[in-house]
Image 1 (tube, rainbow, N blue to C red):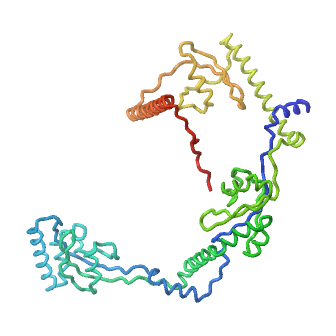
Image 2 (image 1 turned 180 degrees about the horizontal axis):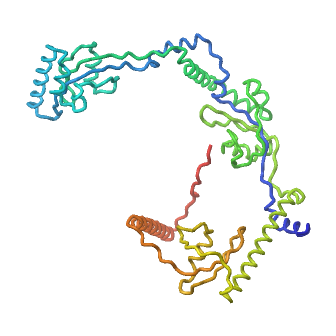
Image 3 (image 1 turned 90 degrees about the vertical axis):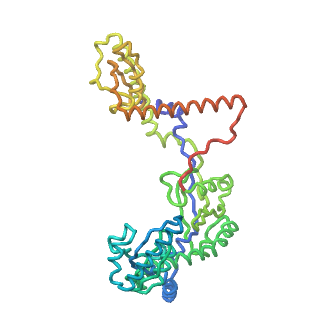
Length: 430
């Protein structure tokens, strides 16, 4: 390769060596999360917040009870319900005479299969776990008390309260990290709401600098280098947000280098940015990209040589099939490629089965050129019932899609339909 070859290639393929449009920017972020880190909390505020929220932090009181249930469906005849109630009242009289016999009576008489074998024990439960009438009765009892007959949608209950578990009260020190985090978050949100208008007005009114508003609100001016119109994997943080990039690369922002308007990103975050250095898309000088030109030129020449040699061998071997020097045979199919390039598999499967063995050539681009000898057609293994069902389902779906597409195309041609809005693209990550 001579420099003249490389320069000729560079001139013919100059678009390959175009540098993308890019910009260096500075930006300001006002967000509640950063504000929260700066908030100092007086000890008294933490103590007061703890005392005010002690009940919430302590959780719920729990109660343990055992019960005897006499089934009576809600829609059962009145006579049947009265009979069930009478049985419950009789059992209530028995347990009140001998409260210690409650468990034995529950085992013998309760219609609740989940608790009867355990003497009617329901273990501990908090409010909201039982139906309301049962819960009201259980939470009105003192430890050891036995309720009157309680009617619910399941029938008639007799309840004995066996234990009360008071909610555990966490100490201030145990809860301090959470309490302080909650207080900082609350105060940060209030501060953000108070400062948001000042931030928005300042970046607009003093649009050629961030220094005054940064000093006023104690914010840090941040920088980002080499941004482009679309976010890239190298772009991090708020500057990867498409809304910011769209505002930054607007015609006015590029030409006037002014602050963008304050852009709300959600989650109590405002951002403004400005371009400090802009580079338009341009073809890079030959001297700067010479090594890249050399690499790409060499690759293209190598591909051309490989293709020429491959086609020469293909033609020679077609003339004298016995001279063909190919690798070991492998059995391939569309779903079992055996690691072969898809283009090789496709070419092999397109070969005329009536003229085998057949030689075909496949241009693999940067991978080179393949000469393939297709020896014979190998029958597929008989699919099992599950594979047959999957195939039928797949073909039915493909046929349905094809029919729907053809029907829509026919309607468009008949009624001269024109779709004015392009199909939406997938949303960029924000």
